[in-house]
Image 1 (spheres, each protein chain N blue to C red):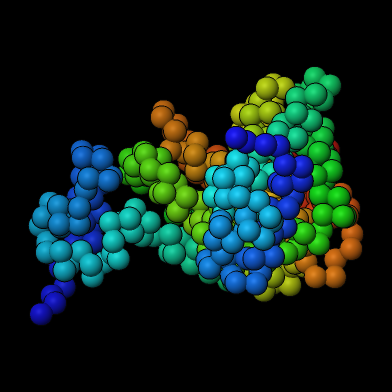
Image 2: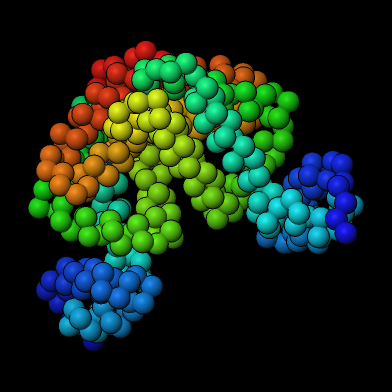
Length: 189
Length: 189
């Protein structure tokens, strides 16, 4: 019999991160994560397909958040306005109170090439999602594709800065700065 | 005793592509590729670490070509000029006479998620290489990072168009167009 366990998702995420940090990602087991969170393995598998997914749960939410925001934008084929909407939506997913968690998670992801690959695949999906969302507004394919590549590039560079040691500026600020840098380059190529 | 075999590298590449197309990538073996190319397996392994590498040999050359071109550019911290140099160098690696081969290779790569992942990793390495090359000229880190993300994005979008069925424009033309599209977006975000 499966019962709803309040907070189990969050407890499992915290427990997994702690265990990955203590024993290394490779050594950690689902049984160990579940035990630390005070739930059964079966409960773990109700939330996550495997231990890797604990680190990547939320990736689909991020895509949906961005896609929904772009879809809800006033109808326009002005790619620049839609890119701004997409970047604003991405920034809202990373408020300052998540930064400490994101730093710890990032350190685990960096420790394993396979996890880094997975992270890059998520960025590729984000590009594809954005390109599709722009195309739905009538943005022409090539413009949609390069806009998506660059917008996700701006997000990627800004996220890396956001989680860097000592950084205190918000995602929105960092993305704005990255966008200005990009503009300075692209204007004159 | 290892003898130099003129043309073995090219023969192995052609043989591998033919075999991948005929039997599917998974079914093809190094023994089969070597036999079709008229060389021993030992000769195969002198050129490639495994059958996957037959599809990705040249990736390092591409990085080196781009990095060397940027390094050889007149000293400047003008990221826009250096990005133009990098894109020109990338375009020279894909002359029209390589397009038919690139199309066939692309179809094989698309057939296997693991090969597609590998392709994306190569693009990530290209970004890192470009970012480093820009930084060596004194381009500030954030500008170098977003410039590299976007330049490789332009390359990626253009390469996908270059190998698309029926496309006849050159890589240089397609990159120029993608860059103009990017400029139109980024100017107004």
